[in-house]
Length: 310
Image 1: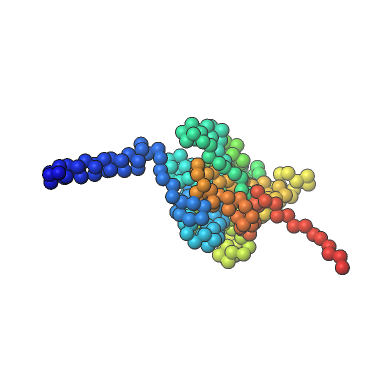
Image 2 (image 1 turned 120 degrees about the vertical axis):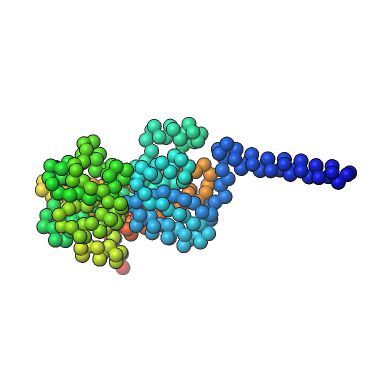
């Protein structure tokens, strides 16, 4: 075979190989190779920013258990988490609601399977005020008046339109009405807390896991500058009862501003997203929620008293 023909053959087979690699790697963007497993690999997840403290603890424990597993969490407003899920930026999001029927049908049509979602814990929206504020007791009707602007108190939130806190208060307190001009938006839950520590003429709304952990030194230092508001118990038979947000008051339906915590998993193979979501719903993950003063939704850890006879 001549040197020229050898070169032509090499060129031909090289072209075929390059074309094959290109086709299999692209495939119109519909197929992506998943190399992670429940115990190893790297995955990006999107998390509602109001749940940041407890999810950081969950990731810390999971990665210490599986050193080859790396979970990169982006903390952002709830609406942005759903955008990431829809745009394939992530396979797992942790938010304050599950999928609607319409959303489930959309994913089933586009993916040929339904994403999994599960209620894993209950949190609460805590009202915080400055330690120098004399008034920290709120009825539901008064909260409506504040959020609508009838009572001119500045209300500080972790966003204006796209966060789970905003959505929850619009649904449960405002019943779809618009907020007043006195409702202002901070960049994050941490910014809400910082604002309230410096102002006694405003109230703030944050997730309980930012201010309710009695074992967290940073949160205990914060509680020297702020205090938790009491909210009217709407389900109590006795009228005029008010409760602070806590695991106990949420469990017994005494604190009315409770909300769920879900994971939504768009993974059609057993990967790292499946491993971490299973961890959140099983004993160790549920105990971490309890340790962070949220209420586990999957496993029941009620204490029982017993007597041991001699």
